[in-house]
Length: 218
Image (cartoon, rainbow, N blue to C red; front, side):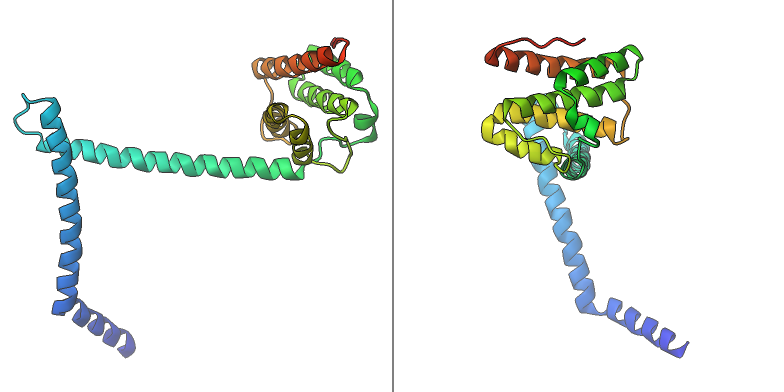
């Protein structure tokens, strides 16, 4: 108890010392000076833009506060998106899309037919998975990547980059949606499934035309 009282007395003594008060005053004075300079700069700009305004001091204070709030919000959003991006990257680097022998032994045509069947049953999440596997095995057939059960989408992405960077970029975005739907983070609804389907079928059709032949679902 005596030790606690003594420590409190010592702290009060330090806070009351002239050097501490001078330091505290200087710190507050510096912040106040910065605030006044920033406020005056904004006030000058306002006066230049709106000469009819006699006193822009209050307006300058309000704008400065608004700017600070906007900066804080933008920083918070930046942190949020960085964390979200990191989580997505972690999923992409760890999950393996080909989970069974059926997944890898089916042709991409069979996966397309399965996707169509699941789409008819309004199971858009499962249909998304088979559409993505169809695209993956199509790339395998083209020799642009080597489909294996132990490989992750990140590894497939790196393989595709060596062949076609633009195609790899499209694959990257499709893989993110596939991961979110397949591994339980979100459910695919009809509208976003249609968008995903449109991109996948467009890629399959375009790549098939380059190599001869057509892609048909169903």
